[in-house]
Each structure stands twice: as C-alpha cells, then as structure tokens.
Length: 386
Ligand SMILES: Cc1ncc(COP(=O)(O)O)c(C=O)c1O
Image 1 (cartoon, protein in one colour):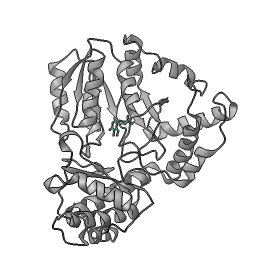
Image 2 (spheres, protein in one colour):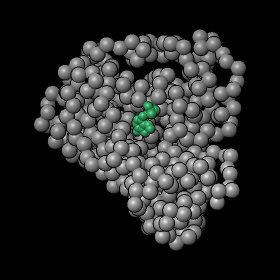
Image 3 (cartoon, protein in one colour):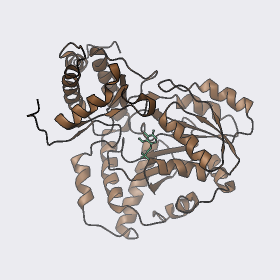
Image 4 (tube, protein in one colour):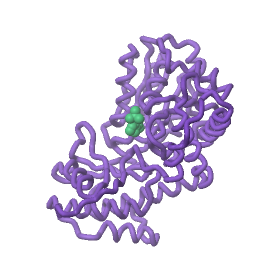
C-alpha cells in the first residue's frame, strides 16, 4: 500500500470545490483596469447573471471577501447596538451569526436546535410572538457542518408577515439546490464564490429587499469597507467602490455562462441526483446519514469508533482525495462528502471506491464493492429507497 503515490488532487469538500478548466484558464488572462470600459461591460454581465442565480429582480453586490465577510456585512449594515435579533442555528455556521452579532453588542435570542437537526419554522413563529422587539431573523439555508437543509420558504412566509426582516446565509446551497429569493420572500441573502459558483475563494455576494434597505438607513453600527450604501452607489455605474478583484470576476463571468447554458433548474436536478446516489452509497457501506433533512450539496454520514479523521488522512495522503470531517464536537464522528460545484458522478465513484478501501484498512466490516454497486444501480435508476 505504501508504494502507491498519487500526484493528482481530487476535491470532494464542501468548498472550495473544483474549478472547470474553461473557468480556470480565465484567471491567467492579462489584467485589465477596474475602471475601464471593458471591465464595466464584464461587471454588468456578471451582476445580471448573479440576479438570475439568486432568482431575484434586485441588485446583487459583489464584495471582496470570503463568505464570513458577507455575514458581517449583513450584521453591520442592518442593525444598531442593543438591537434584538433571533438567530435560528443548527450548526457551526448558524452559530457564527451569534458570534458576529455579539461582537457588535446585539442581543441574540437563540432558536437553535441540536447539530444534525433541522430548524423548526414554528419555533421562529413562536419566538417572534414572544419577542415583539426583534428586528431581524438570521438563519442558514444549507448548514454545511451537518449537511442539513432548512425550509427557508416556510420561514420566509412567517417572517414576511411581520415588521422583521429575514437574513439567510445561502453560501453552501446557492446554485446547488432550489433557492428562490423573491418568491420565498427573503429580505437579505448572502453567498460566496468557492462553492456552487465553481470559482476560487475570494468573492462574496449580498442582495437586499426594499424592506431591508430601510434598516440600512437607520443602522448605527460603524462601517467603512463593508458599507452597502457605497456598493449601491457604485452599482449604478457598474463598478465597485474599491479596486475590484478583476481576475476573479472574469472567472465568475465564465462560470455564470456555464450555469446559464446548463440552466439553474437542470443543475438543481443533477445535484439532487448526486445527493441521492451519495446517500445510497453511504447506506450500502452501513454508514447512516447524520442529517435530519439532508441537503443536496453535501452528504454527512456517521462513522464508527471516531475514525473520521483517519479516513480523511488515508484518502488524502494515499489517493489525493480531499473530503471533510466533522467540526467541533463532531470531529472524528462524521465524514462529509460534497457534490456541489464541478463535482460529478465519476468523482463520486472514485471517492466511494477509495472510501471503501480506507474503511477496510481501518478494520470496519463492510461488504466490498457495495457502494459502487449502489451507485451503478442508481445510475440505472433502479434504487429508489433513500
Ligand atoms: C454555510 C456557510 N456559511 C458560512 C461559511 C463561511 O464562509 P467562509 O469560510 O468563506 O468565510 C461557510 C463556509 O464553509 C458555510 O458553508
């Protein structure tokens, strides 16, 4: 076994995801100036594409930041110190809303559930009734740390009937699974580049409803770089307030072109299929799915005897395959295999074949070949018991 040496990298992590070659090559084009006419044309095309992907008629602003930068933007622009908010969290990234809000002196009412469980929209409804001063509800669409997808449509229905706004972290779910900003009545949506968008990390996105803009007008938290009023002003000229990450935006233009060509709905269907395949394959290995309501972009499965970290090490060091493990108290207890972005069925076949070998090496009793048989069955549309 030690003789096997792999020099290729296979990324099956829930961000960053692999980048299509036609997108990757765009990063090496000679730089153009961010205040030039050429760039304005590209920026216009990209922002229109973003509105399509967010399924909104509104403007979508591009920030030079990772996803957390957009989360912080959604806190500092909408609130004032001492404001009360509800955070509905079901994992590490939901909890991040709490951490950011507390840094800015916001009072947080937590409507959180155990990691692995799904947020109950009714809990939010009850909490809003009990706490009439709440300004906003912050939550997460796909909770990447647990593989759970929350019912944002139902939450949007509840919050839209109040004076409160709904802020959703769609960083992991956007592009990968059905998400409709306007139709689902979501006031603020954030996302970032390194997941469904299939480009490198470094860009974050945010869109706001008219109702949310009224909150921006009264917000008293100090901000400079992430001041959304600046982004709105420059958006009119199809520019960014500060030096734009030109090369990243050019790659984004190419990835949006691919998404549009394929069609968002078709992409959602494809990831739904990959998610079903992954769940079947995990179950065929005797591993149970960790998530109460599994999402369509990453599959989280429980592994025996806290061997999660060892599986990850073997896959990476021997086969060049990166998958993710559990975070915080789930470390070693779960593995997470992604099917977002440029990951396809062939990647999954490869991932599961090597996962089987790693499990056997670690002494887990599995029936050899079962995950591959399960995938083949799904491919032949015979297995529907997920
Ligand atoms: C749902 C979710 N929210 C927030 C983040 C944080 O994003 P970043 O690491 O890009 O700052 C992540 C990253 O994985 C995520 O999956």
